Image (cartoon, rainbow, N blue to C red; front, side):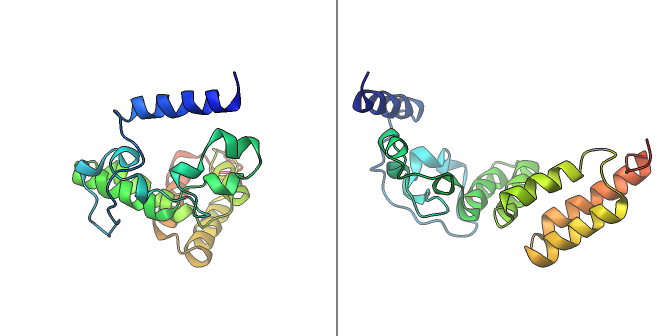
Length: 170
């Protein structure tokens, strides 16, 4: 099977998954608070909303571009804008917890990947002291303006303290 056949197959599968949607859907700008359940799935109903961190569109993400090296991992990273739109959809569906997760995720796009992994590992039971977790929360809040995520880390620190899950408790 050649590259064109594989790409054609992948595009056909994606088209079927999106109920026959193509990338020629009418344009609709994302505006704060405007996305609703009617916009879901975004890839089907508003593919024009989807741009990666480097500005690539869904049409740019092809097997050919992967194979010729014109796509990098940064070209596939999601933006806070589309995560917020997904959160708006969840809110309009009455799914506040999922909306909160999208809001937190949108904040974390500003944090370098390696640092996110370090923070994730620090959150594992018995890995960090309460002060280390509070320092991470402070970093998130001051360096990355990630207030929701900072509050989440502070909540985890308090929970770990109560449950004896901090470094040295085991």
